[in-house]
Image (cartoon, rainbow, N blue to C red; front, top):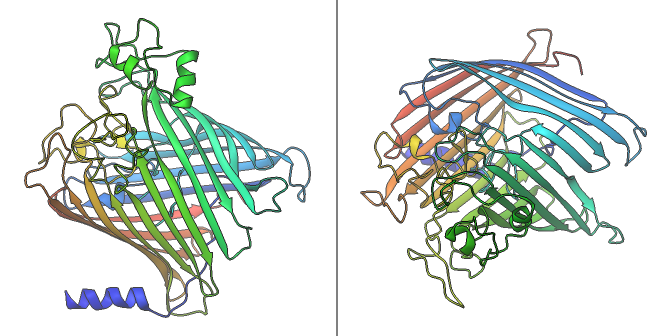
Length: 499
């Protein structure tokens, strides 16, 4: 234990410099091409694959059993008007990624299959595409609360601004980005069918792009609506649909008895659909030695956040990226500290008064959409609110609801850097307390879990260059999941079709 403490202190307080990472983009730059192929194997000591080997991988890694996985992908954009120096040229793009998993339940997946059109910062795309929503770190964190990259991307139509874009006449002091989208859930859900997705997000940045201080704020809004459910609907099981109800979905307006006579009492008294999201705030300080990014995501599923009764719940994080790398044999580029808390939920009682509260928010579960905030049995939001199927080996089912564990706190550390200037390494270490739900608490009431992973990768001169070998070692130790240790080994080749 003492050696572990000494090593952790060395990692945190080492004076070795960081490298400032480049920002990620959703798609290649105009007139560019990316193509890749990857072969890897997942092995585990238990039938369950450790948490951090399958989590936040866009739903492509099976949760159970050893697996041989093959991936091939392509993304490209073409400039169709304007020139390289134009800020408002038209471009068209597309992408395709195919994943094959060979195990007792072998299957093919399409995590990406999309086409897009862009004009300047504006983009319209149709299909599946990997996406991450919210103000938080996107690589070393636990994942954004409402849209983390844990599930396979939903098919959708989306229009939006892909990068922070200055508002006219503000001299770049005010910028915005956001999107508006509609999509579709799978039809073979455990409880509901024909379910639709509505989603939008808007974020504002205050401060010039090159400034030392920048402030961020915004929100995201997700709705499941329009499908069929055997719960809290009339005899035909139809949830409200159509244009008039779509407007109510967009505005999140209370129905207040204004629906047509075919709607159930539940729909007449509440909003149309299952609404959830987060209100995000962040501050970025670009110092001489490091870039600091401090963020907070406050959670909502009903009116509790409006009355601040669930304000204790949220995702809090700090990302530190240090600058300049002077060729050290061992370096740390980036550290992320996070704390996730969801145990309040506005209190144990659901109470509505004129000036007060809601409570018993029951995150990711819904009385009508019983299979909850999920896609293909994966939580769309934070993976620390898992589906009941992940913990069924020991803990009780919460009816046919999506999750039996949404009252949690998590302490998380993510670190990445280089070794011998050739090997890139990263680690995620997470410790959580899990309490079940208000309706069905765990016994004992606090169930503790540690999940960790160490990743290594290095470029090699194989296959004509552009190849990378990688490996991961992961572990689950605790009482929420079965004790399991696992490894991943693989080889990736970039530039299959040229660059």
